[in-house]
Length: 74
Image (cartoon, rainbow, N blue to C red):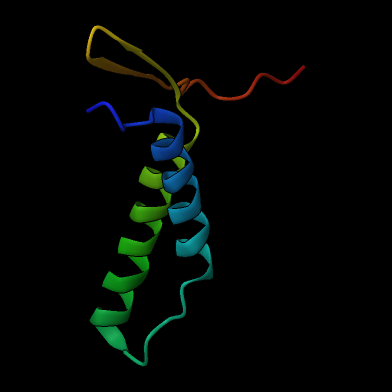
C-alpha cells in the first residue's frame, strides 16, 4: 500500500463521473434504454459522491468524509 494515494483515487472518481456525463447512449430502445439511463444516473451519483470526498489515511485506515447535507440557501 506504499504507492496508494487517496487523492489520486478521488481524482479518478471525479474523472469517472465526468465520463458518465459524456457517455453516449447506445442504440437500444424500450426497457433496455430505460435500464441504461438509470444505471448511468446511478453511476454518476456514486462516482460524484466519492469524487467530492475529503480523505485521511492514518495507520493504514482510509477514511472518506462526505457531506451529504443539502447546500444551504445562504
